[in-house]
Image (tube, rainbow, N blue to C red):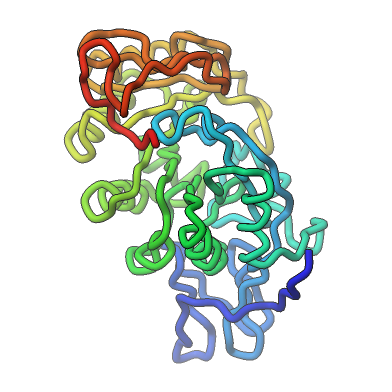
Amino acid sequence: MHDTIKMKEADWWKVQDNGKILCTLCPRYCTIGDGQKGFCYIRQNHGGKLYTTGYGRPTGFAVDPIEKKPLSHFLPGTDVLSFGTAGCNLGCKFCQNWNISKAKLDELNAMEVSPEEVVRIAKKYNTPSIAYTYNDPTIFGEYVIDISKIARENGIRSVMVTAGYIDKEARKDVYVYIDAANVDLKAFNESFYHKLTLSHLADVLDTLIWLKNETEIWFEITTLLIPDENDSDDELNEMIDWILANLGDEVPIHFTAFHPDFKMLDKSRTPEATLNRARSIALQKGIKYCYVGNVHNIEGQTTFCPNCSETLIKRDWHSVMKNKLEDGNCFKCGTKIAGVFS
């Protein structure tokens, strides 16, 4: 990887009266003394300036199916170049990528890759999109902006896979060249957010409303269902009602299965029946597109026409077995299917 990367001065910060730096990138609003790091590890105060050590330092690349992000209504059947950095601005006790998100950069063999080089890699592997994922791309927002701008100039789309925990002003900058997002709505109760993710629900809901009302970004929602934590009928009903009222009936929702990990090894895996129950609650209430993940369930991964129930995009795990959309419409009844299909 050729272009030299240096520690980059960060955006979104101000100096406090006491000389410490207030980081304004996410609602955590860390106050950082000289020589200290914020909660996410990669935003650091050196000599009264905030620097990002994540810029240009991915922890590795993979070429994935876009369905793995998961996105079911954004360029189905295509590949996406995926990468993340060290660190995260959430503290999820059930993190499924904790070996990356909870690592400090000096513990990881991070590469040095310029934004131009990331786009060159996408071109080399012929991926129509780049996904900022694994940890939360919010924390490497400067890198996201620079890559996504060059990607757009080269006809390559950009996808944020995120918890949506970002400051109202900063997100206008970070998302300026973003084409799609999958937002983790981790639960629909503040107590879960506070205790198990060390963040707050209201900020995530605000990001979802902003994506819907103030951007052209295609987005889908994922909820990892954890037994006895966020999988009750009451909570699922409340969440679906909120989505219908605030985001509409066309936002695709993915319910995915938890497996014991990180600091939640005492919990059992999510039964497939729980995912099917959640999906049927969503569909019965009027959500048009609802999927299940982390289990083998062809019906729960297939896109059906919300009007005539015809099978449109049949999936097996992350593979598209058939796609019968015609210009984004149902081949049988002509109903327009929400999404980005070309």
